[in-house]
Image 1 (cartoon, helix red, strand yellow):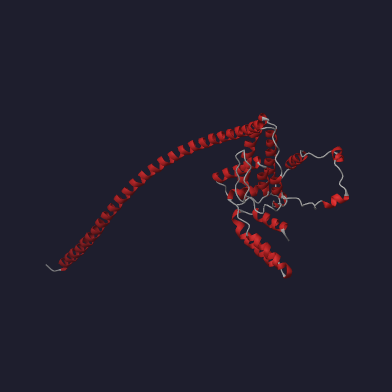
Image 2 (spheres, rainbow, N blue to C red):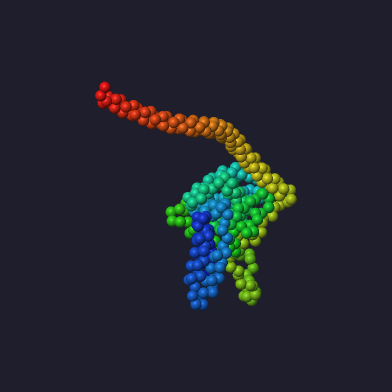
Length: 356
């Protein structure tokens, strides 16, 4: 029992279909509270209260959580691309940044389609507005290490955004930010995870980029004396990924001019992406406007037809009433004529039977 158990419960809750979250959270809290007896009862009640306080994510955040739970290789690939882009920016490699920006556009488009498919498989169709928010969140994951860790945690609560200059604001973005998330692969339902050897290879390649001390360098380090080592404070446990990312120092750039050039190259990439988005949205707007005009004209025509049909119906009903009255009059006249006919027939019979 403790933080890891709470993290495990949270992982299961945030991997559920969107509409099942509240019910499942209540059931999980009751189950935890009921499991505690004796001396452990207080601890179980405390854990149950923490489970009940887990916030429900937004639809966009839930969609990203579905990727983290059922298709984590997509987020791993985005995080790896973001790291490569930051390395290219530090190296002031404008050509590489342009190439990577194009690659990011393609990868983001594919990732958003994957997110929509996964969300629909778990009971919710994603609208265009939500898809745009998901894309912005995934873009932020390529711009900032903390945002990448947040999307991969599987406990995202809201969408993220990045402008290419400042770090992404993660305040209130992740449930239980101080607790390390369980392994992502363990969250996927059997048979639903599509993690591939290629995804693991990419992660391994990223890990190999971290510098390690050579034996010669390690030999140069002075050896601590026992007394001196005793004065050292005990080693702190490894920090959760989100906290570690935030505390890691950022690489310094050589000069203000180089920083400005790198920021300019990144801003150029964002501007091109924004222009492409604007062109695409403008085209969609034009097509939608034309469709709306056609539908409006069709609706106007149908309204006119409806008005004429209502007039014809009103006229037909009046004609129906008139004919109904005339039919009733005709029936009454027929009855009178038949009665006269019967009287005349009887008279003829009487006269015929009377002696002359």
